[in-house]
Image (cartoon, rainbow, N blue to C red; front, side, top):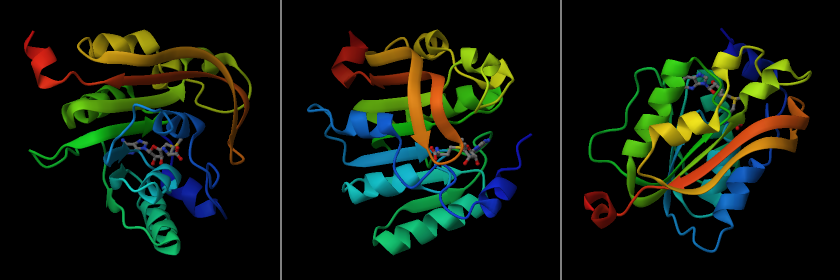
Length: 208
Ligand SMILES: C[S@@+](CC[C@H](N)C(=O)[O-])C[C@H]1O[C@@H](n2cnc3c(N)ncnc32)[C@H](O)[C@@H]1O
């Protein structure tokens, strides 16, 4: 199992760079994205949650690593934004009942399938009607490529699995393929990724 605290402690700067993930930026730039609050699961040292807060969203971010969460808090303080941050394991963490967000982001959470599936379920359940679920991770095909990401395909994503878990969601983008990453020293160069964005139905749609 990856020792995330050790990895973040050893990093002089952002473990995945200082800039937000490109897919996060792409979704937020859409003309139909009007979210005012976001749940960021596995937010690491905070590059995505912090950037979303700087775009004016109210953000709750969760990550397993206490070291990463402390670094994220320093990042937030340095940029003058407030992000609610919790160091917790997504194997058992859940938001307070009744709390909802307009968008949820899960970026590069590569962990055992039960936790990955639970994180997607929690995020989906915590969305307000019409809310956005945005997921990026390495695709299973990345396991056999040299370079970055886990070698164990069970830790990686299959876009059809995500779609299958959220049959009622309206797909905005469901992509598997090669993209060129430039995220710090670790996620760099060509990689097989899954990018998934979908919207929770409005309550009226769900009843039909
Ligand atoms: C590849 S990093 C990505 C971090 C961040 N999303 C980003 O894009 O910079 C994966 C993150 O998942 C977190 N993580 C792994 N397993 C987790 C779990 N069970 N619960 C919560 N976070 C977890 C790690 O601590 C790490 O910060």
